[in-house]
Image (cartoon, rainbow, N blue to C red; front, side, top):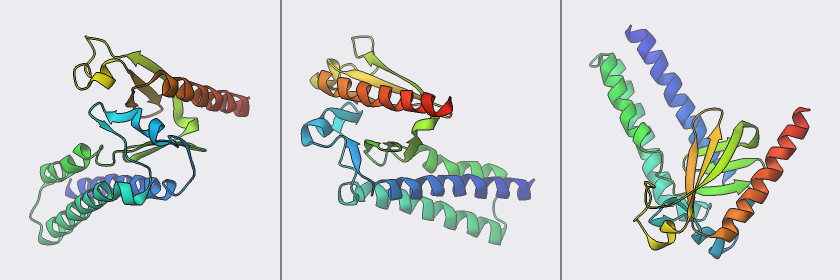
Length: 192
């Protein structure tokens, strides 16, 4: 049981590390949206704080913290295996920081080949659908800020997990609809 748990843990950590490195590499690509400061201020991962620019200097704090979490978990795993201190429930406990660190990078950007959202890169081919949900009095984000109260939540369904962000202006909503529809039509045409 310990061997299976250890192998499963290494596979999960490898996948998470690969995803993180992929996001770091994708941050070097040219961004379609948001390009201007006004566009950046109209998109938020959380209603209270506009996203940061998808460049290393603006994401430095999140990158350092996330990297530190991955190193800490890896060191704890190696110590646990080498000293035979831990049983399989401890490995699950080690994965909690990774599960809760999904928004350390305050990042949402549309690229040529996909989206950057937090610590994830989503290729266009993995996006199944998207929808804008108005933020009204019954919405979970209502009441955080005035800008979010009149905005929309963009929900993007992928082949795996779904992602979302808050869009606070109609202009940004229209730009995102245009880009998403264009990419989804291009994906359907390439499949035909």
